[in-house]
Structure formats: structure tokens, C-alpha cells
Amino acid sequence: MINNVSIRVKIIMGQILLVGIVAIFIYNYYPSKQERAAVEAIDSKILSISNIFSLGVGIGMGETDFVAVSEALTWAKADSALVYLSVVNDRGEKITSFNNLGELPERISSISFNENVEIDGTVYYKTNIVYQGLPSGTLVIGYSLDQMHEMLDNLRQTTLYFCLILFAAGFALSVVVSNMISRNIRKLNSTVHAIADGAEYVRVEVEGRDEIGKLGNAFNQMLDRLENSRNELIRYSQQLKKQNVELNQFSYVVSHDLKAPLRAIFKLSEWIEEDLGKEISDESKKNMQILRGRVYRLESLINGLLQYSKIGRVNVPAEVVDVNVMLRETIDLLNPPAHIKIIVHEAMPVLNTKKSQLQQVFINLLSNAIKYNDKEEGLVDVSVNEIGNYYRFTVADNGMGIAPAYHEKVFEIFQTLESRDKIEGTGVGLSIIKKSVEDMGGAIVLESVEKKGSKFTFTWPKAA
Image 1: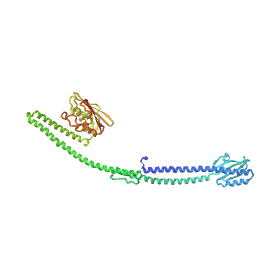
Image 2: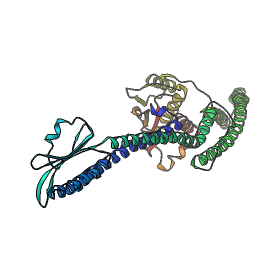
Image 3: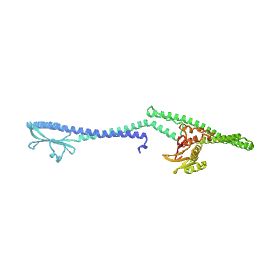
Image 4: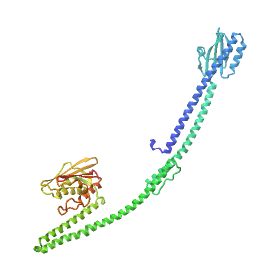
């Protein structure tokens, strides 16, 4: 709930809470402290009156000088809070008394000596009157607490007014401080929302040089750099669009204007050979076959380059692919020779992906495994296992193998390990595999021992 409250309100609430706690503490602590001090002062005054009055009355009673008793009574009555006083001799005879209370409470008779007892807002104190070490009577004093209560009431009222003023001043100060602190934050927040809504060329109009002001300046600098980067990105994007158009035009030229003459050369070589018939020499016939092989290789190279250039550039829609079915179709398409056995393990996944891209990876891997297998009984093994959000496919063979020095080089475009005259190849296939796998966010690794076989392992996402 509080997380949805603005910073400004949080600052105001925090400061008001702090001021409120201070005000409540002052209101409760200060009057209570004064009340304890007042009670201690009253106890001290009662004891002082008792001692002085006992001394004067004791002398008066001992010397039978009742003028001294009268003077002591007059002195004691000077304190307006003294509302009751009674002196009784040791025979129970009342010597003097003073009563502003009217009817006395019945509990006075049960008061213990030298103990303050509050009854109905009056503190009573009872003590012995001693003269020359001998008890000569009893003194009871009644001291009203009305003045103290009135003083405390006034103090509480004054403290309450002070706390209210303090709270109001704290609230006003918290509003001012929160506005000072949150002004730049609100500006920064409004700018961020404006940018999120698509506004351009907006900046934070910061004030001050505090941390928030410096943050606003840094934010403006970041926006300037982003704006420059955006302009550069637009420029590069326009260049990329232009280059894509040119590349598409080039692809069209390559696929039509280059392949057509190649087919014509291929057919012309056949026609020349047919026209010459038996007159053609064995050497010329061999040269014609080499010529047609070179034409076929050049056409394959053009097809590989076109396919390589389209990876990641042409948007291929994802579809549900049963890998087991796709592999069976691929094997039928490749039509491996009888001495090559291809094993596809069970539990091949069904996934939503770019079928043509995944199929092209398997076509190249399986065709290489078939092409470069020099064993009398060739074996190709295709398996899979899961790794998090990816499937890890493995295509292993028992073919010629690849020396460790060439494990990275084979993935470079136009690289072949065997002479093209010995084994026909363009050197594009593994480059297409690597680019296709990496375009999907996966990776491919080669493990191979020369003359013992190769194992290509690549990861492919479970969903495109």
C-alpha cells in the first residue's frame, strides 16, 4: 500500500510522524515531570511547616506560652494552601486548630504518624510534638493540592498549545522541505513518462546542485547520448535497408543471370560431344566431363552462397516440426549408398521452429557424413538430449575424421580438407550449418579423431 504513495507524501508523512512523536513526548513528559517536582516540593513544604510549627508549639506548650503557639499558627496560615491544622496535647486536649475545609473526612483519625496521605485532594500529615526530648502533643496538617492541580492544568494547556503550534510548524516545514526535495524528482518522473509515451527531444529542467539535481543533469546527458545513438542507428538502418535491397538485387542477378549461362555451357558441352560422336578423342571426352564438373561445382557454389546470405536476413515463419519425421524425409532425399547405415535414436522431439533452417543443418551434416566416409561399412548415428531450454543434437560417424588442427577451420567459408578434384565440394556447407545454428541462439562443436570418425554436436532452442 505504502509503495504506491508518492515520495513527496512519504517525506511529509515521515516528518509529521517525527514531529508528532516529539509533540506527544513533550506533552506527556514535561507536565508529568513538573507534577513529580511539585509533589516533592509540597512534601518538603509540609515537612518544613511541621518541623517549624512543632518547634514553636512545643516551646509554647512546654513554657506555657500560648502567645508562641498563636504566633506559630499565624505564621503557618500565611501559606494559603494550608487548609487544616490541629494541635492536641498529650492529654488529648485541643490546644489550637485551623480549618478551611468545613467537614473533615473520617479517615483523618486513622492516619499513621509521619506519613503523607491524600484524601479528597488534600494531603494530611500527622506527627508528634516533642519538647526537650519528651512528647507533648500531636500535630495534624492538611495541605490542599488545588493550587498544584491548577498550576498543572495551566501547564498542560500551555504545553498543548505549544505542541499544536509545533505540529503545525512541523507540517508546514515538511511541506516546504518535501517540495524542495521532490520538485526535481517530479520533473524527472514526468520526463521519464513522456519518453515512455513516445515523446522526443524532452529534457529534465532541474534546479539546484544537490544529488537529485546532479542526477537530473546526468539523465539529460544520457538522453543526449541516446539521441545521438538513435540518429546513428537510424542512419545505419537506412544504409542496411539500402544494402539489403542491393543484396536482393544481386541475389536475383546471381540466381538468374549467372545460372542460365552455366546451364547453357553444360548443354553446349553435351551437344559438342554428341556432334563429334565417335570422332571425339578420349582426352577431349575427359576434358568435357571435367568442364561439366566445373560447371556443376560453380552452380553448387552459387546455390550455397545464396543460401548462406539468406540466413538471418529472410524471415522464416516457425512451424511445428516432428524431428523424427523430418530426419526420415531427409535420409530419403539423400538416398545414402547401401554400405552406409544411418541410425536415428528414438525420442526425437516435436518442437516449434524454423523447419527449413533445421532441415538444412541436418542435410549438410548427414551429406558430409556420407560423402566423407571411407569405411566398407559406414555408420552415422543421430541422437538427442535436453539441456534446459535447448535440445542438444549429435551427428556422429565412423568416417575419415578431421585432424585437430582443422576443427575450427572447417567452419570457415570456402574451406575444404580434400581436393575438389578428389571429392566434389564447395566449402560452404559447414559455414551454413554454423551460421544457421548461431542465428537460432545455439552453438556447434566438433569432436573428431583422424581416420576414426567425427561427431558434430549442436544446440537448438525448444521454441523459436
